[in-house]
Length: 421
Image 1 (cartoon, rainbow, N blue to C red):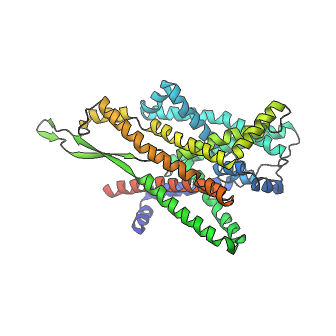
Image 2 (cartoon, helix red, strand yellow; image 1 turned 90 degrees about the horizontal axis):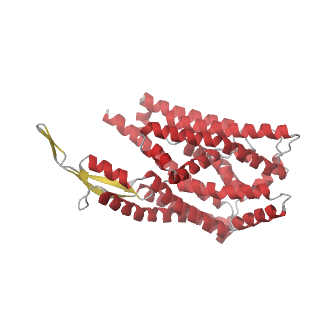
């Protein structure tokens, strides 16, 4: 490990990547501490202590919602826009071709559409969130102009955060959006640990030890499943070109058990947060029908077991969905055939694509089931023990472990490239 750190410090390009990453994260934490005007800090603290929904929403903002920062929306609008664009690829084949078959230029154009869609979503979510907080007495706007100005401010903060995430992906190392969420979670750890020690009760020591053991087992299991793959043997046929012979070698095609990573967790939480936000917006509506529907949604999703069931189902489905979007068996089969490779016992072309699709479906079932169980495990423990601090911690644990693994792989790849040079 020390040799790797030494190599990172010696290599100018790698060192600059980490300096860029640290600089962007420092700018994010600095800007997220700037609050919007007109905040009642006491009511804000009381409101977050009693509302699980806004605690989860605070997770996506990297803790910026906790003090009503100008970045209070976080990367939520951008994640929602990405989900909508991914869903549209299943409806419009042109978008799927743009994303997968037109190379880097097509992917850049697809990402640009996601960025443009983020702007109206940020405005709508900013208006809805500020309206909810205003009705709770946390914010006080003198005029409509004040409210409109704050909507523009928080929408601009979300777009700025999206831009910082893009800069991290381009100039730093790792996935920018995931690292921003990771930084927000890690930044809250000192205060959470301090609160735990301040409220420590010796009678809860066995329970805390059990939770720590479950946490360690969960981390180990997440690492094990994330690193697990199903190797498919691939043979390369011998080819003669001129006076030289190529091919005749054996390799493996590794199919990951969980190819989606942490994305299903983020997608599922985004889908669950949206109806709750809309319901909270109409909870004080003058229309009795809207008020009744909003109350039903809040009570329905407010139940721990109902919420856990919906969470599990969404994580399970989104794991399959994202795997289907990112892994195309027909494209892989076509690439193997063009390179003169084949899976032993399987005919090239459609048969290979069907074989790979069947294998991916089977191993994704294991990954999706595991990811869903780990996602709802804190909710189940909360329902059994009555301790309410585990829901956010469980989701945060999944995100932190997955982001660390993903970033570590990119660092390892960069170091391997330098070693070959």
